[in-house]
Amino acid sequence: MSFSMIRGNMESTLATRRRNEILEAALKVFSEKGYHAAKIEDIASELNMGHGTFYRYFENKLDIFNQVVEEIVSMITQLVTDINPHEAETLEDYRRQLEMIGDRLFGLFKSNPSISRVIFYEAFGIEDRGLRERIQEVFDLIGRYIELYLENGIARGYMRADLHVRETALAIGGALFEACKRVVSSSDPEQDLSVWKETIITLIIQGVKKG
Image (tube, rainbow, N blue to C red; front, side, top):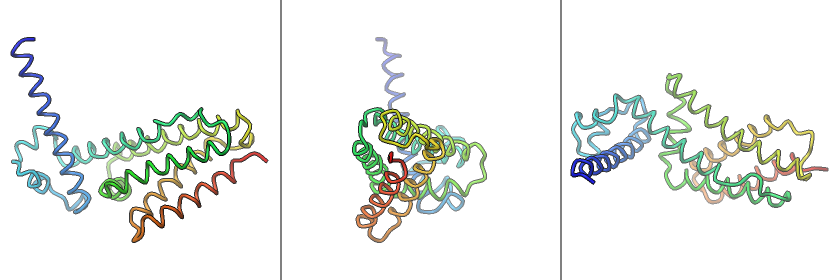
């Protein structure tokens, strides 16, 4: 490997690390101040960084906000799609899968409340078509993935064959995200988490089970 290649790899690693640091600082600032009140100077000051350095990585405030949302979307997608929807052989297996998905989502938002504030509140207050379409895409993706769980349950015979699969999947996804939103803003997250999980899972199971 040549010296120029080694130097290029080092610069790439440093650039990636610096970019991630800026994204972390931006998440914090957008969460605390809100998108409209936040300024590039606020993000730069979090890292004692000059404006010039910031603009090497991002074009403007909307650009970095979009990238913050993209990172959150990737994390959420990974958490949900990492579970095999075809594994559940019984309704009880499906219940355990629902609990796992719920725990993963709740865990993500609880471990970093800034994520929930940005994705549930700030992102929907910005008049940017591309951003809204991207958020809608992730909800649709998760809905399509939940469809696989339902189709598996129908095929194995423990779910109703007459389910409106697409609509049921979107309703389940909406319920899970609404629960996350409520729990992370609760004064007693642990208690509310337990109640929401039991409520949602019971409703889902009762609605989809066969007979």
